[in-house]
Amino acid sequence: MYLPIVLIVLSNVFYHICSKETSAAINPFASLTLTYAVGFLVSLLLFWVTGKGSGLLAEYRHANWASFVFGLTIVGLEAGYIAMYKAGWNISTGSLIASVLLAIVLIVVGALIYREQITLRKLMGVLICLVGLYFINH
Image 1 (cartoon, rainbow, N blue to C red):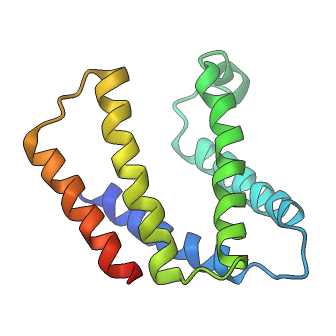
Image 2 (image 1 turned 180 degrees about the vertical axis):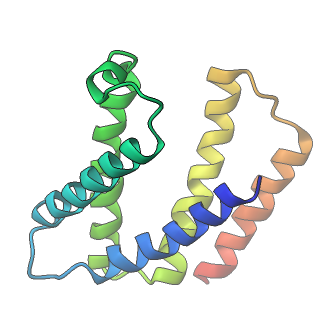
Image 3 (image 1 turned 135 degrees about the horizontal axis):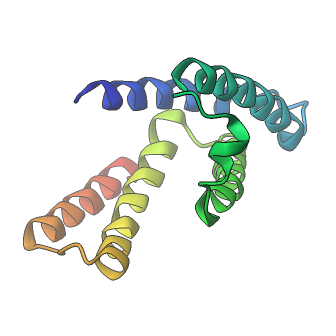
């Protein structure tokens, strides 16, 4: 149950380190082509290791719009983080601010699209996060 969370946290640590350490001399989108080439190869290898006998093309038949839009959003996400760090944001605060703002937006998305409840506890959590952002930035 906790392994996925550990994987997310560890991957995010290296994600932000790599975003911040991307060479200033390279076009960010050229760098991302290398990133996606490695991601493609790792995904292909993991597909073969975890596959249940069906082929890759057979699996593609089950894809919907989300796989394609996901690709677009990943480019925006990664280019945004690279640009954020190149603009001078600290690794300790830039990601935190983006994550808190994302969490607030996702509360609204959850309520509007997925009919999740916005409770007083969630609203208090948002308020605490906003107060935290104030203290981090002042």
